[in-house]
Length: 98
Image (cartoon, rainbow, N blue to C red):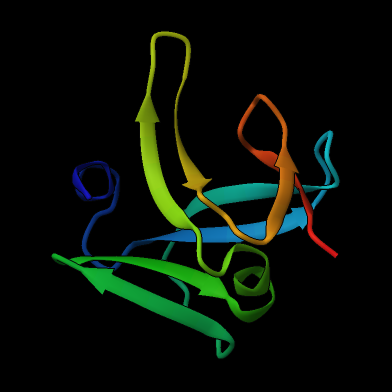
């Protein structure tokens, strides 16, 4: 939550999306946004919001949003995603369970 407070101004939120691509078939995309769409699901806690569209939510349902800070990389990531069969070592690409 601390990182979300740092990057989001009033009226802004973190948008989490899943799109085709990456080395495993699907990849997570994170962006700061101000527009909420009809099919968005809003998750709010301690004054910050995360928004996920309906289609992307099906790919990450049950996972946890985390912020990882390491020597070579700092990034948001979805951890413990029960919809993902395997992921890439980069942490942003995954394949889905069928």
